[in-house]
Image (cartoon, rainbow, N blue to C red):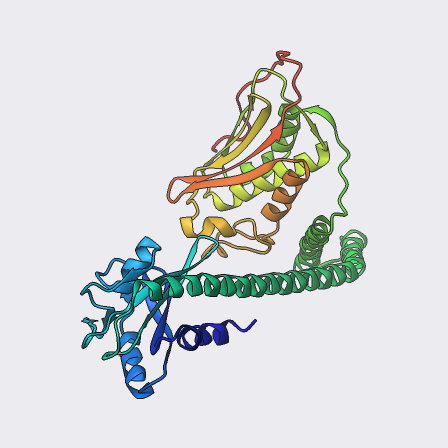
Length: 408
């Protein structure tokens, strides 16, 4: 189960079991083959020098070499005059009368590397029978490597899972312990502000207000941490009913009017003129919309535009929240739903816990839907999710596009 030891052992076993004088193993990484291990029954010093030369320059898969051909074709090959590999900016040829055999190591359709062997520079040439034996050996070696890799990956995945579970348990515990003192702090600040409002100096009033606002913000953060922990543990229950998703989205979007107006933004609400029935938990679905619109509002500059759309498709309902903000770099898109993730360089532009999108995705998936994102840097970002539509009605409802908040 030691991958390094296994790779070192493969060339040695090829010599001992198949009678080769020397064998070399390359591992594939990216678009090149990297020398990994070697063994010889004679002159180890010469083999060490050869490997050192190849370590300085990996052999590209598109090179005209024996090991490159074996890797590209995924077939065993015998040398026919081409160099074995490359090293120190020059191809490494086959000296004397030697003839190398090279065969790929493949596991589960993945190229692991290439194994090459010969009978020495002045020994007999490698035969077709030798090539078949080497290829068979390489097949078993490739399977062994993949088995070890799978075990190691499973072990790492389990370790990551346990570490993530411990982190979630710790955060939930700390958050739970913080709820009571935070409530007391905010209540005390509010009482001071009310009971002593006439006798407080302006600076004292500002300090009490700061305490109240900060404790409220921290309480909201604590609640989000607890909610993420509950979602991960599967302790969130939905109370679903058949609802018109258009009305659910409209209620959530209109509740954010002050938030949007505070940044002098325009929010366009585009709803279909037919009922979009879905089985949803209204409160949780409004929470999803709130999180997505709040996220778009925070990352869109003042005076920007937001769009919230609902449209029916055959058997499904699509909800979109789009903005014309700065967008998200392509290499960051895969991280936006991770806990506590913040877009690099966004600290000064937007404040938040980094949990809103994580919660939104978990709630959509809990409803059996899918939440995705598309962004073009400099043009904006669109979050979208789909839910299963309950068919059986095409009732026309009175609604259409609305502008919830306008510039100025």
